[in-house]
Length: 203
Image 1 (tube, rainbow, N blue to C red):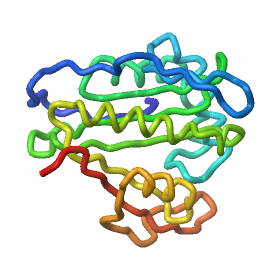
Image 2: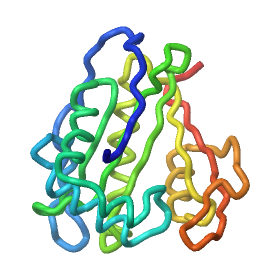
Image 3: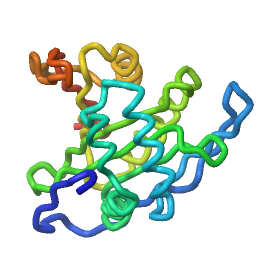
Image 4: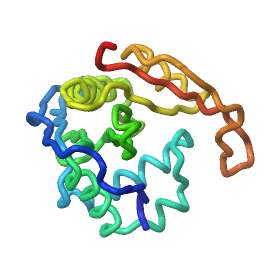
């Protein structure tokens, strides 16, 4: 099944928090960038986007073989897993009608970790250096700041992904751990996995 996710018993207090509105910006190439929450009808284009994204980089945990097995229905289930749980966030960045970036936030499901969440982000290679990652991170940070339970955003990043590390540092993320050889690439090489976090609410 595409994008497995862990769902425990619903032990969190119910609440509603939504991404306030679609955001539009102008890119350096003249295109209009729209950032909005994903909806199930995005499944076909999102599947094409993920397959292209994974073919362009080894910085993600999924492989090209993983991507080849995914279906539109898997993608739709993935989107539903966010839209059915308003404590989570899945943002898409569109240049015209093409998705060029994604950002996800998953709140931890155990009540003792309900103040924590995990963030993941990706941008197509041809749209690097256009501020898309920065704009998505800004939107996600504001969303997390308004979240009634979240206090800390966590993420992991490969040690050789210097561009991403710099982006996270610019947003105040700090390294709190490193797993040596935490990632094994398909060619058998190893990369350290860096753990970073940012507090979005004061102690």
